[in-house]
Amino acid sequence: MSHDENVEPKCCRRDFLGKAGVSAFLTAVGLAGVGSLVGLSPSVMPDPSKQFKIGPPQDFPPGTARVFEEEKVVVISDEEGIYALSLVCTHLGCVVTLDKGREQFDCPCHGSKFTMEGMVMKPPAPRSLDRYEVSLVSGGQMMVDQNVRLGPNEKLKV
Ligand code: FES
Image (cartoon, rainbow, N blue to C red; front, side):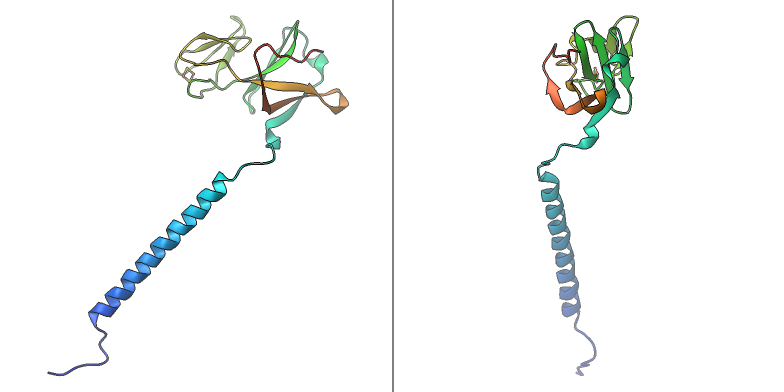
């Protein structure tokens, strides 16, 4: 029986491939873990993109309802003041549309309806539309801040 020393035994090659596979797997799991931890870190600074200027109050006389499509916000002015509502339905997140004739918001997905104040007129939406802060900033402009949510009926008095 001869023994060829140049032939690598099958057991060692298999062991090497097995260890390489385990190593690659552990590296992938480690990277995924680090990625999740980064994703879980709290955001200390508010997202500046959630604040936007809308112009001076005189551009919003009572009766105005101006939709800002990109931000999914409507700014409404009535005799009591100016307020901003989210156009994102509180049921499952579809974008509601303004029906100016009926003075209400309609959700195209499951039929919820909201008043001009954002209150639920018809479910399944479980709660009113989010209301955002509107404030006066430098230069006589108004700004909507989607980081600050207000209670019902809160408006900027001008
Ligand atoms: S997402 Fe608006 S009613 Fe369902």
